[in-house]
Length: 479
Image 1: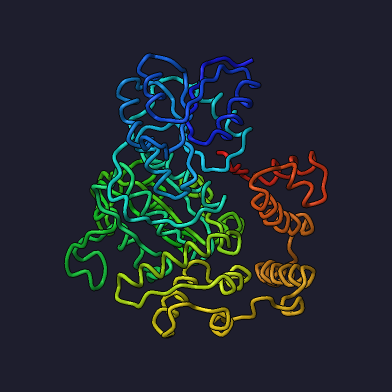
Image 2 (image 1 turned 90 degrees about the vertical axis):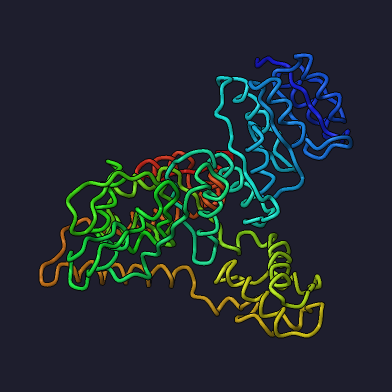
C-alpha cells in the first residue's frame, strides 16, 4: 500500500469529502481544509508530503500562495485543481512550480496515479521560468481535448524538446507554436516561421540556411537564412511535409550535429534554435511513398502533439465566438452577442475550415449585421453548407474506401509502367488502410485500447498486435 501524508485545500466541502475518502482508501493519511491560511500553517510547520489545492479560495488565491510554499519547502509537490479551465491557468500553475494541473471535474483514478508518481519521483525539479502578459490568452477552449493540450504545453514550456504539431488546416498549429515560444524559456529570443508550401522548392534551402554572394544566378549579395534569424529562439517549420528531399537531408544534419552551411558556403555555422514543426499530412504515408525521410521524421517527432479539429470539440464554440467578438471590438467592430438557438446550430455544423472558419464567420457577423444579438436565422443564412446534411450528401464508407484503394492502385501500377509489380499487393494495401483506421479509433478513444477494440469490434490482443506491427504511437490523455 502507498503511504504518505496529503494536505487538501478546497472551499467546496463535497470535494474535500470525495478526495478524503478516495485518498484514504488508497492508503494515504489525509488532512483537509477550506482555506489557504490553514494550508499555509500546516506547510510552514513541516506537515504533509504533498499538497492538493484549489486555485480560488475564500481568503487567498492559490497562485499567490504557491511561491511562498515553494520558497519555504521547495521539494514539496503541489497539485493544483481549478474550474477555470483555460490555457493560462495551466501556464500559471506550471510557472509557479506546481507538479501538476488538473481541470475540474477530474478523474479520481487519474488523480491517485498522479499522487503516486509525485511521491515516488526525486524531489529536485527544474525551476520554472516566469511567464508574462497573462491578460493575452493565446488559446481558447475548456473541452477535455483542449485541457489535455494545455497540460502537455505547460510541461513543455521549460524544455527545448522538438515538437511535431499535427492537425487539419485551421486548427491553430502556428498559434500553439507561438504559445510554446512566448511562454517558454526562449521567449526573449526571436520566433521565426517559414511555410514550406508557400516557397518555391528550389529556394527553400536558401530560405532556411541563407546563401553566399554568387551562390546561384541572382545571388548578388550574402543573405541570412531563417536559422540565422532564429538564433537563440524558435524556428517554426510549417507544412514540413512539403519540404523537398534535398532540404530534408540538410535539415537532418542540423538536427544531428547542431550546425549548417549556407548555400555556396563551406564553413559550418553552429546554431542554437528550438525546432517546432507542423503538418496537416500523414508523414508516415509520405515515408511509405518515399517523399519524406524516416530518420528525419523520428528526429522531429520527439513530442507529437495532435490538435483536434473543431468538430471534435464543439463545446468550445461559444467561448471561441465570444473571444473573436471581443477581438473584433478591440479592432473597431461593433459589439455582438449570439442567442442559444444560434449556438446550437453552430455546434451541429461540421466546420471544415476549423477554428479559422469560425473566426472568419465572427468577423463577418460583426461587420455585416446591424443587430447586436445574432439569431439562428442569421447563422442558417451564413453557413456555407447545411447544418444537418442528409446521409446521401456524403459517400458511404464503402464508396470512400473503394475510391481510396483505386487511387492507391493507380499510383502503384503507374510506378512500374510496363512491368508487373511484385507480389504481396494485398498486404501492402491492407497495411495502408489499417494504419489510419486504427489511428483514428485510438484518437477517438483518447488512447484507451480497450475502448478502441470495442469500437473496432476486434479482440483486444489483436488490436495490441496490430499496434506493434504497424508501429502506431499511442498517446494517452494523461500523458
